[in-house]
Length: 149
Ligand code: BTN
Image (cartoon, rainbow, N blue to C red; front, side, top):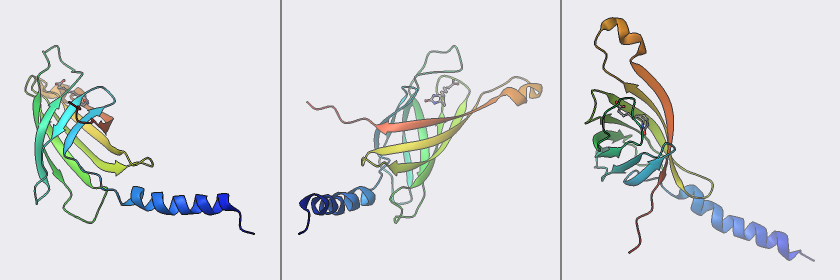
């Protein structure tokens, strides 16, 4: 006599698991990171290029934070459902530039997540200060759902 519970378990896994693994991670949309910064990525074109805007929650300066433009590129392979990418934020309120590089993943619950590393280059007035001009860190971005009206 075949037990119903294990059979149902295997059947439900067979139905759910392929759906999770084949879901594609898409960069376009609104994202928030672990610092509370918000970013919008516009459409990714056929070459993999994209633009967008970045509203950082924090700054290394004393300047008033303003929304800043970003330019990026997604790896060109269409086969990869978890693509690698990079983008540059040219800060509009400081002399700094940040480059991010990362990968767009679909986690075990089917949610998209951007795992990134960044280098923030600040401007220094003297070459002797070059050693302290670059910060490094990581950010994890999750998708902001569109507001329901
Ligand atoms: C500056 O302070 O000159 C510009 C803002 C830098 C914000 C950094 S970039 C890396 C990290 N991730 C964020 O979302 N914000 C900070």
